[in-house]
Image (cartoon, rainbow, N blue to C red; front, side, top):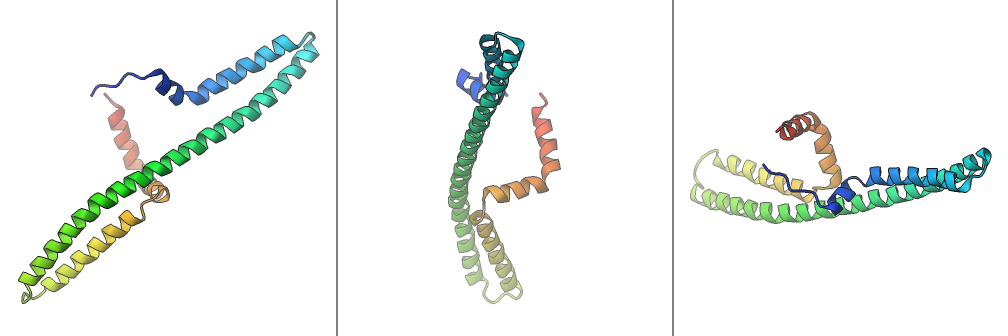
Length: 158
């Protein structure tokens, strides 16, 4: 498995928190060095710069997280639409096949209950797809966290 080389944009987006933090620290130190003639002035200017950088940092992180949530919600909606289309088409084929088999096997004893169970499973699968959301994915991840960690650990090993 080969890794794609990162573009500058991808690198910046992946490291944005660290880059903004480093930039904020540089701004704070430069503000103190450039704005303070005496030691007391240095600390006052540095403190004011730290407060301003902290506020800007908080607002930027809030905007970034908000954007990430919106993108994630959009991606989940697209996955839900795709799954709904693919799975519901397959479910319809299964339903039709079961119906045709049921018509052919009308007189067989016990198969009617089997068909009912199959139809119930089809309804359950359809309900799962209909209710796919970020919260349901989060619950699923919580339930299977240990398995996911093991799988992700194995995938990370070369």
